[in-house]
Image (cartoon, rainbow, N blue to C red):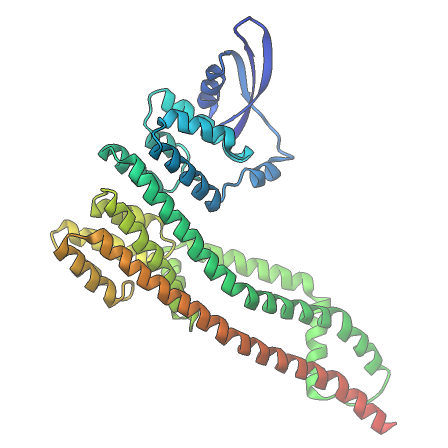
Length: 401
């Protein structure tokens, strides 16, 4: 969203000026005319100093979209026209969403469909979201689609919250370990080095290793930061290549404990989204294509693209999924075959999603249970190494004296 400064005249001919937020200049002009003003001049507001902060303040979270989707679904189901519902949302929305809802409302009042208005905000509304709204409008069941979409978004938020909540403790412990190690190497060990250098005594191997690491960190930290930045830059470049995407995705799936969990989380959201789309009247091919475009894993995304091609050729959906065991587990193709035979694909996919979700939650619990003792063991080894490296030389010096 951009900000535009304008000059206009009201119904009495009085000259007024102000600022409006919109996607482009044409949309800003529509919003100003909507207020009953005659536009004289309109220009994009340039504020480079505060652009970063404005961008941060205008960030729209998945939680915001979930809340407003539920509110919109409730109003549409209560019988309110879409224009009136959007008008209420605009007045109740946070400041970072008021401009967006104003533009959507102006587009709908100007004759565009709701889905067309949403397409002008691709950074906020995903292709899946827009495809579902389009299907609801086409089938005349927008109220039902909005209800199911709100339910799906709430389940996604709840599931992601559980996963993040379970991983908070291990992450905090690891960050604490790294911070303590840096403090020891940069501030504590150099002082001990000065103390040991006053005595002409041979230091233990562990102490020399610790002192060497500390000396490297203190003297060459700009070079280390530069190397880290170059490594990150190179990684990002490699990640953008087709080969890099695939190699990184394969590596992520091969990480013990974490790899399988990542796949389960992706499959949970994939099957839940496909269930929602198929149940809302979206053709299975369109559901596959839309879903594959929003998945952030090239292995599963490519497998879905190939599956859609196989289905276009006339092969069963279960067969197309079974061709890619690296992406889809056997239970998915099995259950999809049941869905094809019974004609209840949306229900079957939702059940599969529930299976993956339960399995993911169990893996998260197992991961946190495994990480805690591993972290404690590593922490104990680190503390023991520091104690030996620091205390042993002092002991040797006192015995010599």
